[in-house]
Image (cartoon, rainbow over all chains, first blue to last red; front, top):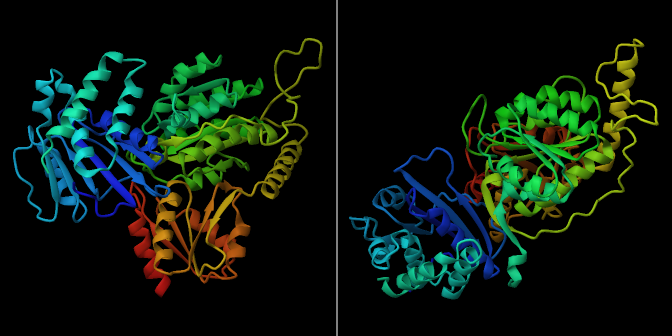
Length: 186
Length: 356
């Protein structure tokens, strides 16, 4: 397991292209943290994003009141595609953690201080028959690799979020989370 | 249902809407603009569901004038926009203030001047607190720093508006509007005993007609009288409303002061300073008008310096200087146009100022 250096306040960014579910992923992390009674904020990039460009959401989890929901220097980045790695690798905190969707990131990490966990999120999601759940595969990998959130909190959150309005997505998303937990390489 | 589902996890903009609905808001008119678009979106389904009326107006100007009408009927009403849209509303706000009608206006500030950009900013402090429209009038200006406080202050805003018969402005920014954090949905309870609305226009069958107006031509001193009356009301508000949070000011050698999102970020910086043994405190005005002058004077017992932080080129600093009556140096840290502070950036400035 790779632990974040500063575990008092952890700044997380989830980045990918529009449609990969970075907003949903941010929501799941934040609500799972809320379930664990942690202080948490979520902020989603808004406005001047382009189709095909990168989208991101940021989550801050803290033992005390969160000072700023806006993240400039992430401790952890969930990177769902190559352009997101190019954009966020240079700004990561020293010793930060990358969770890489190696299905769509075709280069290795340049900075030697960063720690990386690899997960073929898109391929695994495709094998599960639900390519859109690659975000959940990546979140499973994040939980397993960093211990940031309890697997049960994530699973419970997904259940709470989908049960009422889209019950058909509960099981597939939970399967995707579990697959990510099992397949991650640290 | 588990224990934490009692808490809401919705965006700042939506927190404000839900609180407004639960405080009995019965009418909303607005026009879309980033970063407050979730407000009309949420109100468009939520308000009718709660028995109220939502109207997407043809412009910001129309929306504020619809509020003028709705407020005259005694209905709790609200509009919201972001900086350029709030500029458009200024004429209507002046009329509403002149007619002494209660309503709630939200400004989720973005970068300016002009069309600016869509990032959060605090460049509308002057406009919010010093007038904005024409004539001698004041708005009660509330500046929440967290989603929880946004919930509470939105509810309070309707009470202040009704109690004082005055428009209330909620001055947020793009960070607060766009961020999501857990909120405990505390039920609405009036914070003051609300007077009967014996001035509303609801049909005069069986009673004398009433008039709500902003034009005072006769006698020749009528408008001066009216202005005197307004000033007396503003003085009363100034005496009664002292909304301020103070953190670690008792022994502070340096007092940082900020409002809204900047203040919550500054709090993080102050904790960093305290961990290094530096005596730093925070004064956070919760109301920007009336400005909590007294908090600054009291802090000057120990404080040798004040550091004002804003997401602007420096606006609230003028009120801080007035409040300090030139008794100590007042430093500034901030930029406009969508620049965001971080606890680290503010801490660096604290260190520089503290050691001088």
